[in-house]
Length: 365
Ligand SMILES: *Cc1c(COP(=O)(O)O)cnc(C)c1O
View 1 (cartoon, rainbow, N blue to C red):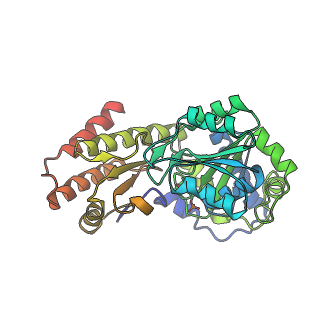
View 2: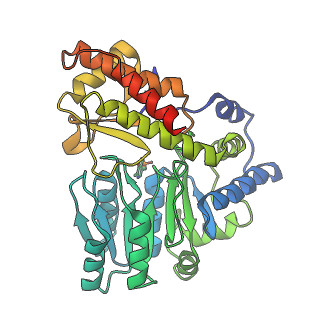
């Protein structure tokens, strides 16, 4: 079965082998070596002041960030993950302002600035780079810049779980950048990442909040290449291997052309790309036949793609582009979609998906 869901992603053989070493104790020089290497590489990748690695899935880092950095956040809700920030704020009885969008439509930076100007007590903004529930790419860089022009002390919290390791993110106006192990890093689920700016570091120092997710305690430990609690050792050893095998610039470029080739290929089958501003991390197709297409893909062609969530559960399907993916596998997916459409009597097979994918992939490469 080919796993083509936008998280979790398949783990490469070399990373699985690296993680297969006998258990390392986390309070050892040997493990600290892995930890330090990952810290250095992560800071290099995100181009921020500092970084934390937490033993939790991405949502843990979202919760820790809301608690540490927000008194009244503006939450951009363009889907399930944006809504999650709202739910966390509510769980802590924290006041918030929310912008609710259709899942295919990004808010403009003007709209966001307007709300900030009207709500001067808002001290932070929470937004996804890629809102994975509809495959939408927010223009986070432009929004962050506009927010900082209004007030440089507004904390810009960015969930980049499906963007880190996919594409270059300009973090110059971002204070908190959240990542997760199970998406583009091709690791098992269970570790989250938080990139930090000067402003974020200053707030951590002043806000000694929480216990398990006390970022002040974590930062103090992690600067000494250890963790406050038991580290997710196996995942960190896997991450060190990722940095060993990954040529980041090459991954960015390859992901971009593979993602665009897939989009163009599926459009040639008269399939509709769902978001108005698609992210590179996944191709999201809107189709009333999604359930049947996914079933045929899985049963007949051994391709596992994701459906939707909530209101889009049965009307979209999502194809992953995160991680290092062999071109022949990506090509098989679009061919399988075309074959599935033929089997379902939706569109007669003529090989166009394959042709358009290859033309785009090699034209751009
Ligand atoms: C996967 C994902 C998360 C993390 O969810 P967890 O299940 O807690 O790892 C958060 N935000 C986005 C945009 C995601 O795609």
